Image (cartoon, one colour):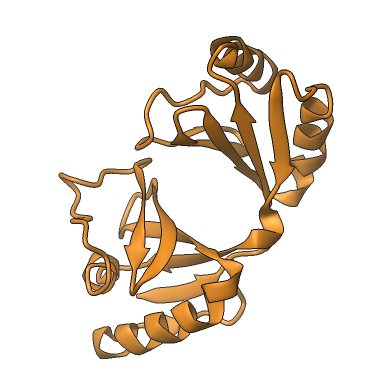
Length: 179
């Protein structure tokens, strides 16, 4: 099992208004070619952009820095009557856990079953691990499971220390190069 911190990413939050959220979602689908998730459990991805619906009218857009400019330019066309757009990439640290024991490790602090049948690829959940609020996302993988954990920056060091300690008995190792 490997633990690593992911490279910085572009993370943008869009908070819409109930009256026009449907039309905002249509604009997003047309411009970014990614359908907005209809529920708060399944992430949608297209090429380099992943969309999480983290609330009834709230979305997170995640991509690497190379596509961040494209997202920022698109969202600059929105005004406050459309939606409130906020860059929140500096508020989260993203940690990747992958390997055959990843589920065992996560279940040591997560009150949710992350087995294949209950937590398939592309699913995400907002919960707590070791008393820290997180967004846990299961990535597609041909082999061992891969999870990314979005941790509020103010808890990142404490969370990382707990994760490394909990992974030790499972032969977990830290990848210092990152992802």
